[in-house]
Amino acid sequence: MFAALRLRTVERIARWARKRQGEDGVPLVLRARRLYILPTRAGYTAGALLFVMLIAGLNYTNSLALLLTFVLAGFVLVGMHECQRTLQGLELVRAQAADCYAGREGTLDLCFANGARVSRRALTVRAGSGAAAPFDLAPGAQSTLRVSQRCEQRGRHRLGRLELATTAPFGLFRCWTWLHLPVEVIVYPRPLGTRPLPPPAEGRVTRVAASNTSGEEEWTSLRAYQPSDSPRSIAWKTVARGGPFMVGQYAGIAGSDYRLSFSGLELLDLEARLSQLCAWADECARLGAGCALDLPEAQVPLGRGAHHRALVLRALALYGKAAP
Figure 1 (tube, rainbow, N blue to C red):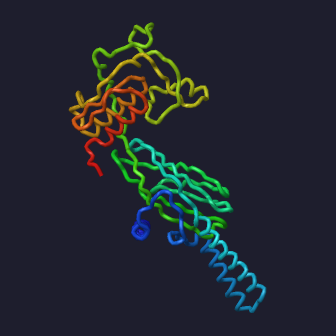
Figure 2: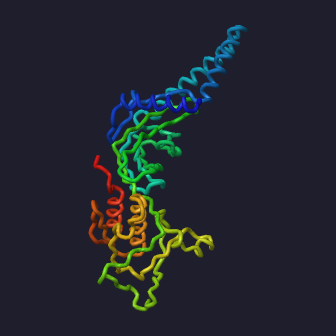
Figure 3: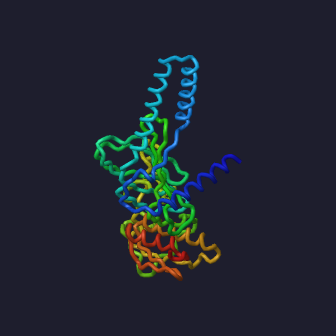
């Protein structure tokens, strides 16, 4: 019950802050009016300790105890000022989100610049309920931070609020701000499905290796593993020898062209069809084969390569979604 009450309170405060701040633009310089600060658990403990020391010093009229109390109180107040100053004046230069698959971790690149002559330490950025990404900024430095973000549904999504915070310099206070950036991310369907690729388009089958007459694909090289790759394509012998996760590339049907459509997928629902088409598009890219997308409301002409693959996946991501 207390957790739910706390969550509702935080959400109401966040809505109030967004209404107060409005939409943010990039580049963005943080000003004092949008920074919020509260004591941490250690800060509350320090405050309680100082209060006890003050009562004891007044009760026993001990000047040294009172002097120590006031010195420590000044130390805490300076820490509060420095905590807010760590964020004040920090500049967000660039924000860009990469396309990702539904249900998988995507990346958001944030470029921060420190125009001050002092370091900014113990900075963290959090997207939604994900893990906080820590970083520091040296005087006059500029750094790009990669933050993980996750979307469960395909389509075009507006990035939610980001929380930028710090507990520098002593951890007694936490200063934070919320960023509402005009950044959108395209979320592809989940690449799921066990059905094999449809037959290549007639007249477009070209074997790369003439010696490979058995119809099997010919291994050509290894490349770094990507989240969209099938586990069956991983070079497990390399992994067993202590090497990194690599994926074998084959050239057996690199010259083939495929036309991807809903044909043969009528028994599946819409999301399952799109997931299967997404898996087929990734398989064509892995094999170096060309593909075209032919759907009732989405057509992508024949092509190949990373750019063409992105066009096909974006068409699948936005299929049936109303334009914003």
